[in-house]
Image (cartoon, rainbow, N blue to C red; front, top):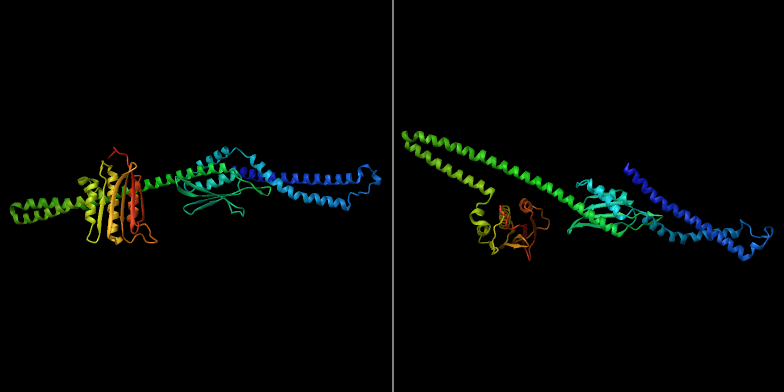
Length: 420
């Protein structure tokens, strides 16, 4: 029902200016024709003659000439009238901010990444009576109200906080054969509101995806931990218990066999301890608890250095306590980045730097190796590093290093005084 009313209003708004132009041009033609006839009569004194002595005939050649002149005068007049009728039609529209309220009200009911672009373009087309509206997202998708017209389009860039969101393309209305300009201030306000809505929707989608990944990662971690405990530690401890009972029974009757069994039990206990350390190391690197983040990074850099690869490290002098999640993320990202350099970069030197800036922490790992390939796709290691940074509100970027090599940069927001 609403779409039918909007389409009827659109057709009416397009028809009325055209009818107005036709009526005014017909009136102009009749007026010019009558003035020409009156001027001819006045010039020849026909007004003072008796009707039977008047040589002028209504259907004569002069009359046809006057009609043709009046018709030719309509050409410049219609050029003069078209833009003025268009402006009059524009000024009769609703208040611009009432228009913005209508558009936003329509968008508020469609706050999903899939349905929002169509809702935006259809609400703009119906509210502003535009023949064509398209929204091109930065991911390559395009939503449009119909086939693209041949008239020039108005293109508006959509962005928020220097992040590109796409482009809005509008076709102005054609009123009485003339392009109707769109209020620039209205377009600017609409662009800002649409950008904000698109950005909020994108953040909401990213938040939902982040929550899904966190839940999935948590469940996967619990599944792996359960498997390690059930399939690894559980049977090992059960076997050790049975061997201990057997050794106890053999202790009096066969001390040699009992001693041999206890030696095997000792080896199994040591293997179980190593397995427990492996599981604990997967949950949180022990070096962080033993040495702290800064000491653990020093040991990590020293351990990954080889005769062919020198690793330098630069750490801040002030070392306040950091949240546990930040320590793990920094350590794991540095570990993954240095391991990638050692395995794949073919570098001679690498540098790890960590410093505080603007209430945050910045990690940078650079090398002088082969650098990024021309057509590289993010691997599992890079995706894992980026997820570790984003899980705690940070960012991670990988760029070409100067003059050669690769540079991995991670930034983490910090609230000092709050540790966990």
